[in-house]
Length: 245
Image (cartoon, rainbow, N blue to C red):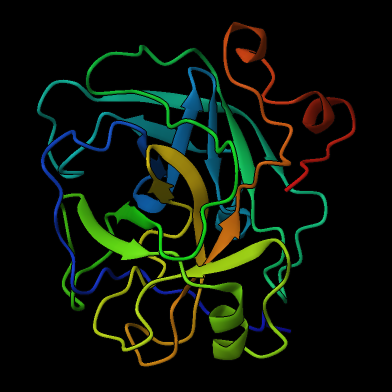
């Protein structure tokens, strides 16, 4: 039985990011790039649970063009991969995955964590989504960006009747033409410097009334930043394998 939704890897209506202007962006690689992720401190990356293949993942940080090295890249193996215990592959609910780096990332001007949110971003907040997915069906070696607004939960639920849960929200344009189109899945949606969402799913690409759907990283999460969490992103995640979103 297949999941209820399919995933795409295109950014439509976006632009090439200024090199290294998205220092929290991570490429998940197992021989090739397959998903995006977000660095949240020197030891942990957030991605989408539907990106899980196995624990043989290399985290690539400081990248701009994923086919070439230009100096600041860091390639670090995964030490542990933990999917949200309530992730549902059929409804794509709780589409969150944590990946622990085998060694701490070296934080510098090219590699920096995104802040976790102090509260949910209200409708209308302008955000940035980024990824290496194809643009207009053409493979993209360079990181691409798209500026887009958070949509109201009412508009989100109207776009996807009976599909949107409390752990999801929409961002994009109801009129179509611009969309992350899950490009890349697992990648960051950052609003005012805070990681508000993880690129999750959608129907079609840049279609009218079909915005992108994101896994919510809300103010109720237990993820903590700082020295105390260098080894563990949250007490609940490690001791109870629970992430509150």
